[in-house]
Length: 449
Image (cartoon, rainbow, N blue to C red; front, side, top):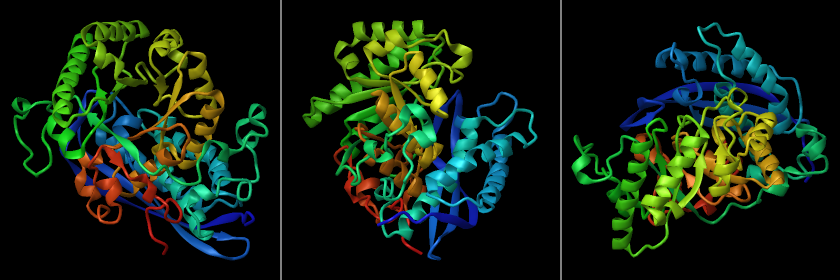
């Protein structure tokens, strides 16, 4: 099947609000709600065929637009205003090509539009990527449906004639995007469960039960979902608390996994950029190794421990820490330039996120794959269609071994309409998501309209 360049005909969007069943702490703030940005687009091929696509992503303003001067409502309002501008820019696009070509040509316009919104603080580039991501997703979804294929069948040379050098420069000449992807999803993948800073580990910590039938403690979650992978949120600014927290999590896991007869499980550590220096990180790791040597060995990787502005913090090189465990960039990853700088500073891995866009995630996966870096796919408490999108990314990028997903913990109400359609994704029983079922047309979440 030959490539059939498309143009964008129509774009629409809407918002949807949900409250969390229990708060999640991020950047010192207890977050108790989420706003989803839902998008629709219509595309047309040169042959006159049309298709409709959809996208969805949480507007994670606390994560993508942290601010000491602007309130939650103000940063969320700015993202909603930017969504309107991005919708219009996307609909007005006159380019033709593959969705990757269209988003690649539009991205600088999105950032320009963000810079024109008048605020006490500029909208960060990361925030712009989050707002643009469901529009990009809708394009990929529509393109797959136009060709009657899951979108991961449309990244080879038959559909995407340009090599990676066209997008990423001379160093990537001759490299193909599909070299870092599998056409079919992995049959199943372990689920990373979030252990938030506010989450009770043991029954005596449950001060006010939610009482909705879902687990209340870490031990209960382990048995409820058969968990083997745990992402532990840490403070970063309180070394004693962080060491104690990991030790306590490990103690609970030891006890509960012994009851289940499970001998192997894994941790990822997330400091939310609050670690003051690489020296503090190294001290934390050494203390952990002394206190719980078996727990220390269970650490699979460390998420971006220090500030996201790499240029302003070039002294925080990660070479020594990365020799102990993979250290991945997350918030810092905005483009190839930021990836290359992180690599120069000793980061050994990359965290891909659907909320930064399907196009960008695929291109950064290809770059990281060429550089031989550790790869993981992380969450933004993605529910519903956005979780299908994120899980699909994890299931198709070569080298990614697990899925991070926590909407079932914090916002299960947003998943209810999806549970019967994708039981293997939304009902986890043995610590595994059944990603083999993610073979639908487009991004696989929405039926053909």
